[in-house]
Structure formats: structure tokens, C-alpha cells
Image 1 (cartoon, helix red, strand yellow):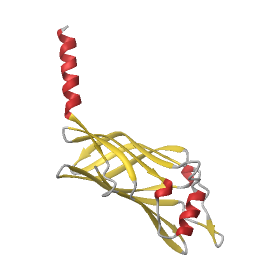
Image 2: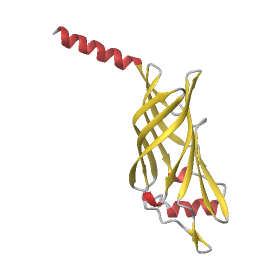
Image 3: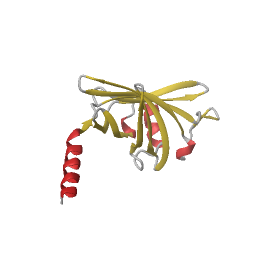
Image 4: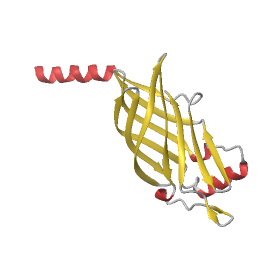
Length: 173
């Protein structure tokens, strides 16, 4: 009986020391950049959802969702073409969820998975971590291969866009 009581006390104490923080979409954004031999383009999404789980100052889990349709380049023709190529009606969300997180000297190494265009892939992301005034801020970037997610790359003047896109994120929780 004492063992059960001790286990319950430790579990309850552990739950109270954990904190869930919601992403601050007014201060957060994700941007991607792509290339074609004629030009470079980018699009930004500031309408992001997500949660972070913290225990005694250490990040335990991260989950982020971004709608494909919320990425805006400032060029309506480019945006509508992107929605068509990415099949945004069929695959409306990009979802990232962590599986393990390791903090080292103000940086965190995040292993997780990203679900994009109906395909889930493992990914490793290194981010800068700052914690100030009750906010947790993660910034960083990584590359994705469009062909890894079975995206048919569009072409212009008989040349396809480059396979790699670069993602930069600034997430404030």
C-alpha cells in the first residue's frame, strides 16, 4: 500500500511540475525558400498552431501544425500554383511531432517526424533555444527534398524547380 501511495505522489508531483505552452501565432512564423535557375522565391506562414511540453525548464515534447494554404509569397499566381502542386485540398496540413529532444548549450537537437503531402518522414532538427520573460523561443532551419514527399516538381522553360526547399522557423511559445 505504501508503494502505491508513493507512486501516486510521485506521479501527481510530476504532473504538476510539467507545463504545456501554446504557440504564440502573433510572434511565430515558418518560411520556405525554393529555387529555379531563373529565380528564387519564398513564402511565409504566420498562422501556426502548436504545443510544447516543459518539465523543470527542459523541453520534453513539441508538436506543430501549419496549413499549406496559409503560406503566402505575395504573388497570388505563385501561391495558387503551389496549392495545386502540393494538392492542398487533399493534404491540407504539415505536421511535425518530436520523438526525442536533447538540450546542449542553448541548442536543442530534436528528433521527430514530419508529415507532408501525405507522407511521414523522420527528421532531425537543431534549433537555438532562448527562454525569457515566460516565453520559450525556438529558431532554426532545415532542408526537405520534394521528391522524398512524392511532389511532382513543376518546370519553367523545360527545367524543373530544384528538389531541395529550405525551411526557416521562429516559434515562440
